[in-house]
Image 1 (cartoon, rainbow, N blue to C red):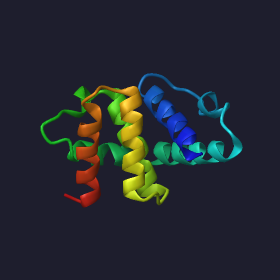
Image 2: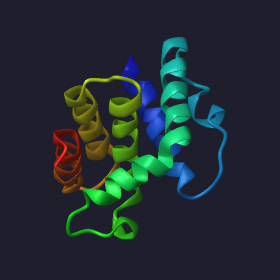
Image 3: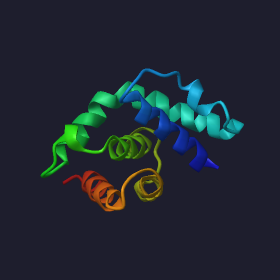
Length: 124
């Protein structure tokens, strides 16, 4: 199931804000199919994280990037990586992002993340 791969990639992205880690530390317990999916997300995130940051910053209307919860940023990075570089349908990626937000962040985070990602996807 891709959800486990997504969650491990999210955990890697979140940890990358604070320290350098090997992706193997986050994916070693996954099943074979989930490992390759998580590796794809992590690889594309690492390749495009500067571009992704610029997109997120541009769409944080009324918020400063440095003040956004790191878990929320990690969720957005993960979702945008899937949408932009892995051809995951935006609605699927956003729905999965909201599930991660509900599990790992605050009660208000899902609404905030949904707004930012929807704005990005719509190209506003």
